[in-house]
Amino acid sequence: MIPFIDLAAQQARLKPRIEAAIARVLAHGAYVMGPEVAEFEKRLAAFCGARLGLSCANGTDALSLPLMAWEIGAGDAIFCPAFTFAATPEVAPLSGAEPVFVDIRPDTYTMDPDHLEAAIEAIEAEGRLRPRVVIAVDLFGQPANYPRLSEICRRRGLKLIADSAQGFGCTLNGRHPIAWADAVTTSFFPAKPLGAYGDGGAVLVNDPDLWERMDSLRIHGKATPADGRLDAHDPKYINARVGMNSRLDTIQAAILLEKLSVFEEEIARRQVIADRYSEELTGVCLRTPRVIEGGRSTWAQYVVEHRDRDGLAIHLRAAGIPTAVYYPVPMHLQKPYVGFARGPGGLPVSEAKADQVIALPMHAYLQTSTQDDIVEAVRGYNG
Image (cartoon, rainbow, N blue to C red):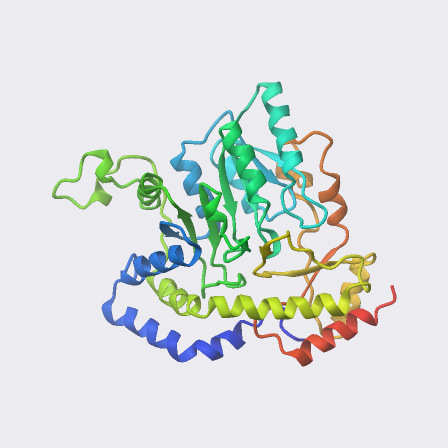
């Protein structure tokens, strides 16, 4: 079976550089918060035009850290799409707040700004929860409609997080999501376009005070200069707040530094592959991906819609071609989340798409001949 994501192909290209980077970490021995961590944070921020980057243990912690820094908690509403991975909504109840589920656009699968505004108005009218935060998701690698979402958030006094776990590196009219969002979060899970060889995450911000609070929170609430108590003791032993333990390992930072150096090229490669998929499959499937006008996707996944999605998956598996379904059950229909609020009119688009979407193999090193085989197999299914 061909790989769904070929991590080995990228590793073969970078292996000497990655092995040298790991060897440097082994030589200096600073395995936690070593010099490569700070260097990676600096370069990651520069890549997307942010003032500051803060690494952490995983993409879920990356979402939690700004919520903790803003003191989001009981009685607060966090608006997020239901057509996403569990990490997006689960940070709301973990913080003591509640998620409010918003529908997606049928063309881009990202948050529908009109439904968001209606959801905010409904929550305000009910009066039980305080609207505080919007988490938009750069689903499948493309940016949400940040100009609209940002305008709504600024007008209504809400914070905006760009959950760019799949879409770090995406742009809209040449600008990264940090141009509009209060915080951009990402994941370095190995299958992501910019993935580590273990877990990891990061938050990108422009606010130094927010960065400092999150830096404190990721290391057990250590004291900061703003807390006014930095004497001769190590600040991690002077705790100013309740925090967590969420640090990126130095070895992962060293690996990510090497991967970041080729990331822009890999995004361009993914675009070529996505264009070819679309050229060959338009008219064969119900729908091929559409990117928002002015947008650049990182193509974390190449997702099509098919009238017999499950039958196509069985057909492709028999031909040695793996597929994946993102996402078979929207979050608002899953057991832990059925009791939380939804925007007015429910989420019909999310529910409809869940029955039709299927992702084909996609990575920067997908060979043309392999892609030909995938296309031929999809075209050959008559279900």
